[in-house]
Amino acid sequence: MRRSDVLWAVPALLACAGFAWLGAWQLQRGAWKERLLAGWASAASEAPRDYAAVLAGRSALPRREDLAAPTADPALPLAVVVHGRWDPATTLLLDNQRLDAAIGVFVLTRFVPAAGATPLLVNRGWLPLPPDRTPPTVPSPGPGETTVRGLLVAAPAAGLPLQAPPWSPGQPPPLLPALDLERLQEVAGPLFDGLLQLDADAADGFTRRWRALPNTLPPERHRGYAVQWFGLAAAVLAVYLVLVLRRP
Image (tube, rainbow, N blue to C red):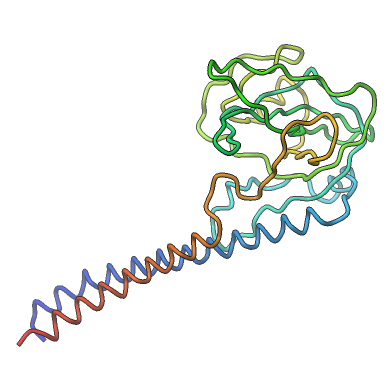
């Protein structure tokens, strides 16, 4: 083997290793999302647990976006039921939420449990935004005590530190670029570090099509990308071997 063949072997092997690593990462991400989907399906079919009892066992759900490591357990939802009253003075609009080809908002309203458990934000569903981006009129939920059911999920990551409009409870719902629960608690009071996604057939809600993987790749796409990366690794190795073996 010539010296030049050995020198070219280094970048060829590095490229093969890099492509193979990317393929393995895609397989891990696909498996992670399969576990997430299975957990959501299980939560949707199980009997709801009492919200106060859930809090007694765990103080917070992990943020789904923080679980980037493919070996970490995904943040699975919990089916819960909670009795209490709505706090319509604390209603927020989470901006830039897509439903099919339309852009709108999620309507988030604070709910105060009767048992003295930590209040939480309930995602009541999706409403469209008009072209001029005028915030929609949000009907207030029914007065008095009521019972709500849904999936308790991790709060979305706050994302980039965008400036939210000034707001205080009782004012018209603001359009929030991101949900920052820590800042919101400073003006609205205690809040559970998560959201309750209201059942699709519950009253006081809007359009609800809850998905475990909104706006992201499904597991089969990750497997497809893994095949492509492994194919590139094999192609680089094959080209190198052909060039070396053909030389006199």
